[in-house]
Image (cartoon, rainbow, N blue to C red; front, side, top):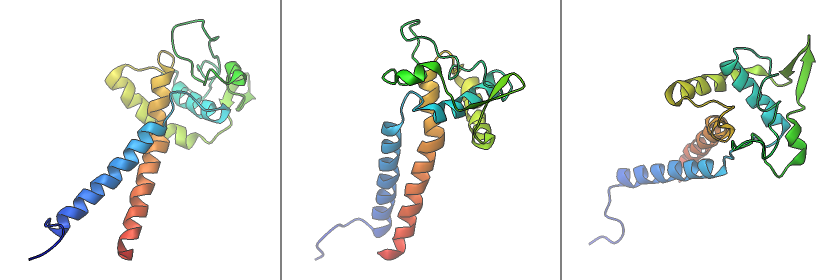
Length: 162
């Protein structure tokens, strides 16, 4: 007579894998915010928005640069309303030949622009109309995905330590 779990070892491992992935996913979903956290985020998200919506790297027309006044519309704001400095838009930008550009590397923005374009084709979502959903989706596609992959990799590295 054996005492303990009667499940085969492979099945227990599969359940553990699922729990680790599910836990990481829940944390990623709960940790994402529906607004840009600061000028850095705003500058990066402005580039993504303008690449897809305006087909340019210039961020002049972005909602993260031209922020609507609080209460001026029923649409959500792209920044945390508790942060008064953010009502003026991002200051992480460069003025070159009369246009503003993000001072951040464009490579992450190019990757996120692909995600945003796909999301826009499937749902019609635009950053200007729903900055809250745009910020949340881009956060999940970048930081959220990176977090889940990192948790999975650390979990896999720990397997030989059993």
